Length: 155
Image 1 (cartoon, one colour):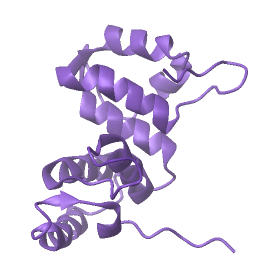
Image 2 (tube, helix red, strand yellow; image 1 turned 90 degrees about the horizontal axis):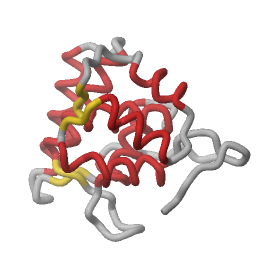
Image 3 (cartoon, one colour; image 1 turned 30 degrees about the vertical axis):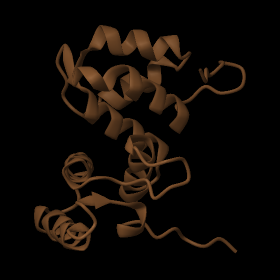
């Protein structure tokens, strides 16, 4: 199991977030205590978890998919980059495959992260999701990276 060490890696990685997802997603909702325990077990800094949790109002129990979304936002520098990480973590496609997720999952993550961002109008969120839904209707309702993410070329 991948484990971060304080000397070489003091932050969340896609691999560690995937480990947390495998451990916590079956429950749907998890207690703050359990989340913090699993976070510490992977030697991740508690300060990073607290910083993520400050982005929304959480009680004693948290919806795991929201924590996953916030973790992906810490990994990605933009909303679409965050969704790219989420698709890669959530996909059941083989490694190196199209990293597809159900439209409903994608829609939840996009809507949630856009609401946390606070600068994207609801009409823009709705228009974006409507265009994605139309493009994946013939793909069994699965959203892949190619449906929304265009990597920037570095020269």
